[in-house]
Length: 306
Image 1 (cartoon, rainbow, N blue to C red):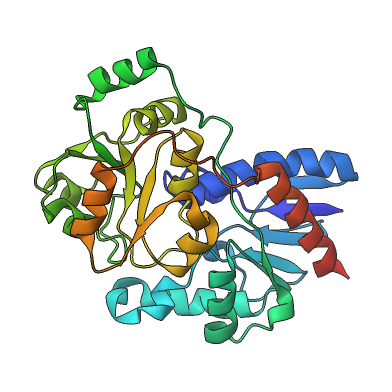
Image 2 (tube, helix red, strand yellow):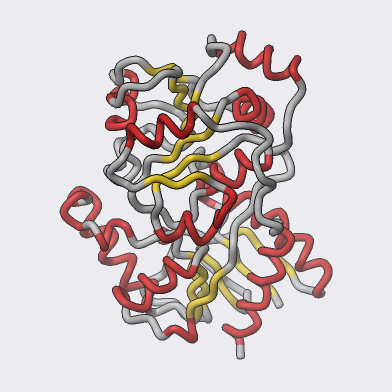
């Protein structure tokens, strides 16, 4: 079996890039075990199946079986907040509807796909995401070095994600404006809007070793989102021993269970209070790896070809 895999989003610093890179590495190993091959291409030729790990790579007129990973349906669920990208997403969602199989990270997203895109539930497959092996608790020396490099305070709360453009569901600006006892560190490549947020420390884009040290040095990871598809930073933080405090939304509750502290989505003050009170060590992350994800994804390929 030869699989064309659209690797274009690998360079994206957000979660979509992490998913694309980590799954691709594991899929190469899985292909070798199963006697198959992964070809990095977004114009599939001479292959048996095409997998787009992001919605932008979905083909409107696929000429072969196509698998698409759908990370969430927020732009469709909240169309009024995503007017700038609405038309593009409508066309991409049409392409998703034409996929042989759809991979989603949680049952919450699966339910959205069935309800909003009218995709038959038998074509939707939940494949969990995982923390990369780079995310482990780091030494005091590494934490001290990253503090000095980025001017981080001794005690802080951390948020990790995309900061190039404001995303209404992430509520980063609202979090920055909420009174808190500890400084807030935002990790991600910032746009101008993020640079104008009051009272926060911006690290810019960091590599995995730095991010693991930043997680390790934080009192807690805070996630104020009122909608998520999976919440990959939460499992990364747990893998580094860092407590997670998040708003109680279906996907995060599904992924984390009792591994995180949850607050109501309308209680950002409570979220910050709980984060300050968080204690180490955090519970371990879910017992799921990218190798597990690759095996489950390859199973979806085989179903798509039947």
